[in-house]
Image 1 (cartoon, rainbow over the protein chains, first blue to last red):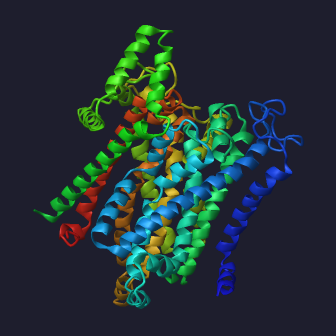
Image 2: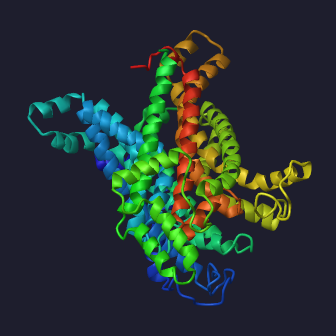
Length: 280
Length: 337
């Protein structure tokens, strides 16, 4: 069944394209730093050199190698994106599933909480929390993004839950005396797998963009490099006004390519799973 | 009570609750985060007291007082809420002894002046183009527009801003390289000054409009496709209603969720435009926030967020009014429960 699914998906052009873009950048981020062994935060040459044979993507104002920064940045941004998305997904699915399955008071109170958090823009909450953290390592940043980005997932999972829970096979499980938790995690959530995967993909692209936003305002990781941190330095040292295009274009382009490929992937899956969008 | 009133009252109650929760978060963060940022700041100030005893002592005393150090926590919170509701947002550290409210008030109009027109413009253009793409699905127009929308929706505002600034201001020299008006000019209501402001306005405006547009277009496109396949449209079509009329139905029904979306995305757009201000050195709240963050001016950071969130919740309420007025289900009490 799984191999049939993959074969079907591979026939969708959008799916192929998005997977190709994302995995090639991912591989560059994973393998790059191993092959290209230059320290991204060490001065290795003269400052502000344009791309050349010696410095493939040039150097920044401190004479640091920008290709090395980009490779490490891709790795860290994807790492933050994955971790943040996993955290949001865990919170969102748990709240949405409990709320949709239980109904009643549990449902109304959980949804009230969700709506309140939803009404507060996540990027603001992120900035607010991050502003009070002195040391911000990638895990902290992922955590800050993760705990603020889940409300739409909770709402979406809840509505899926409502439509699933009145199906026959759920009644069967209930009659068999299975516990609520067991039914939720063994019967309901597996049936939403495709949906949850799409949510994960969207959360991840959102988290990578959020990381860049936090970095830009001065609240990114305090040690190490990420795509957002490169942009932050480029902005802080006026690279745009001084025409140092090789500093701010590559990290932004990678970020857009990563995020767009993920959005494209979720669009492809959406079209595959909902016939109305697929039909000609 | 009329259904519209009931709807609005419920929304006002909800938004007020949201505001209180937000205040609770703002209140709790400096006090709850390990390493207690507030006490770190206070002790830092205390150590600096040797250098400039008079001023530092005054700041220190003011901070102790405003954060209510030493009082029971619930009293601190009630004090905090009641002071905020009276419009007192505390005193800035970096700009001591200026009040936070007064500082933010000087920056907020620039942000709103950029944000509101840009949001509405992107909403109108994005939705129109999205509806067109949805209607002409799988045509050349749609195939061309969709990838553009997808990419734009994932392009951070500030990165697009950097590109636009680089191309149009730095390379081509068509627009100024930043600020809200040329330095040396004195704000006045003359034609020259307004023209100067506008020429500084276009690039930041465009970068927000362009990057916010993609998301609206994608949403609208999907919505129109769904509506076009709906039973009522098939039925109306089989009755032989003209295409123009069908399209009007589709458009109206697809519009409602987009209006709700407008309220929800104000925050995201605001977040993006705050950072865009940094790229353009635009003297808005984003610029102020950046300075407050880099000097750890917590009262100022708090104040900026409180004012921004209040503005957002107010915008939400306005959207609710529009929604209640437009949606027939609310007018007739169908959604009243």
